[in-house]
Length: 122
Image (spheres, rainbow, N blue to C red):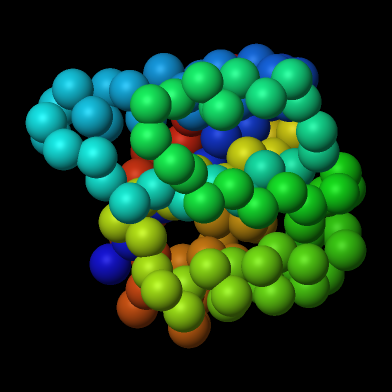
């Protein structure tokens, strides 16, 4: 199962900085690079490019995943999970609909593929 963390709030740059820190902490904790993927809403300054290993980064245009029916997220997630990463971060701008997104990810088919971890709110 893919360890999955929802990252929300703040600017795109702040969310990516938080993910950058979390990926570095994962590396320090485990001592090995986990195959990590990111689904990021919007654009930022590219801080994640400074990490010492490759990340599978997918960018989605800004917009609430819940309000647009999860279609863009679903297609991106399904493609990503064909070769499931060990770790996945999903970054969204607004934490208002975080419970609905978590609920969506905790139901079939994703409940068998993703292990949700505590949210990272910036």
